[in-house]
Structures are given as structure tokens and as C-alpha cells.
Length: 301
Image 1 (cartoon, rainbow, N blue to C red):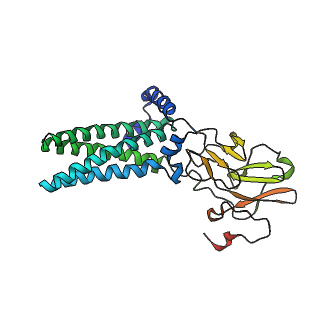
Image 2: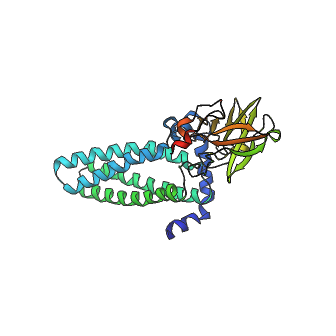
């Protein structure tokens, strides 16, 4: 923890990180097909962690087979190492795409994470070359060093995910109202304008189009930015931070880098006020026309 804290405070790396960030953003611009591909929008989950399992799995398996040291396992270890090295290329690309959306302390830890992964890959490439040249002892030492550095880098990646919450659904722990709760007077909601309100300290995004009222969580699931600061086009809201686009009717992700739909609220008018309540994930994309119809929330989680 002391190490990660020191890395988070290393402001000296910021100028270089910003330069690399600009280069990555040019190569993988927001609201592009390559951004959605590398972010994992198309599978509904972040892509980078999935790919890292392939690289780590093959590298560690190759290292363990190296310990057995016979002709059969040596061939298998060499093949696994080659698979891991090739798999590392799209893994790095996906990681850089995610890293380009970070800033401050998170970006610094991500920089150290990327540097460690790059160093481990370089060592594994040297190990693969040594294997082809018959230098088995040198190859094993290089792989051992690469696995050690990769393990430290993986720790930093875990710190980003599990301590800083990078890559997780930023709305997962919101205390959504399970019963109808008033949020705003009907007359105070102008048409065609994104309005932020609160219910039980949870921020709610409201939008009125004709007689239809839409309500979503005001937090982008990608990095937690406020959606009411964005723009509406074709009944979809675009996040002002990284360009993720969510459909107002059901919260579906139209464009990444977000991978998780925005939480949706049911809406009704009552006594001159607008009321909302949570719409369960299993009900996303549905709409009830009868406000007195019982809620499935009563059935339990």
C-alpha cells in the first residue's frame, strides 16, 4: 500500500503520461468502432481483464513446465510462451485504450502497470529467442524474471480495479428507491432539457419529450461522470467525459467506452409531481402503462 501511494503521488510522470494519452486518443478516438472494440462494449464487459487471463495463464503455465525440464514439456512451454506473447499485443492495446480515459493518481498507477507489463513482454520475447537458440537456462531465467515483474504489475492492475474502482460499474452501489418517490414538480421540468434531481441522495437524470418523461441514473456507468452535463440526440444522452451514449428509454449502451447499461427508473405523475422508483435490471427495456400495477420489487431481489 505504501508503494501504490507513492506511485499515486508521482506527479513528475504526468507530462509524459499526458503526451502518451494524446497519442493513444488519436489512434483510438472516442466514439469510434476501435474504441468500442477495445473497451468491450460489444460484449457488455471490459475486454482488457479477459485478455490478461490468457497472457498470465500461458506465461505461468510455461514457467511451471520449465520446472519439469524434459524434452516434451520444453516444447509445450515454448508453444505456450509464444501464445502468451502474441496474446499480449491485443491485451496491451485494450489496456492503453482504457488507460487513456484515466487522470491523476489513477493514471499514474496505470502508467506503472503498463510499464511493468511492457517490461515483462520484452523479457518473454528475449526468452523465446533464447529458446530457439538452445539457451534453455537463460530462457528459464528470463521467464522467471518476466513472471515476477508481471505479478507485480498485476498487483497494480488489481489496485486500480478493486481499490480505485477502475473498470467497474460506477452505479452498482446506488441506493435506488424501491417505492415511488417524488423528485420534482411537474411544472418544473422543462421540455427538451436534461435536469438533475435527487432521490435519497441518489442523483437522477430527468428528460421530458412531449408527454413522455425519461429517468436514468445521473452517473455514467463508465467513470461516474454526470450525464446531465451531456447532450441529447435521437432520445439518447451522450456523456460529456468520454462520449458514451445511453438510450433514454431503457439505458442501453449505444456507443462506448461504457460497457454496462445506465440504470433506469419508472416514472409517473401524481398530484402535480413526478415520481420515480427503481426498475429492476430484468425489466430494463419494458414499460408499464398502468401506474397502479404491482411492482416486481415486492418479489425480492
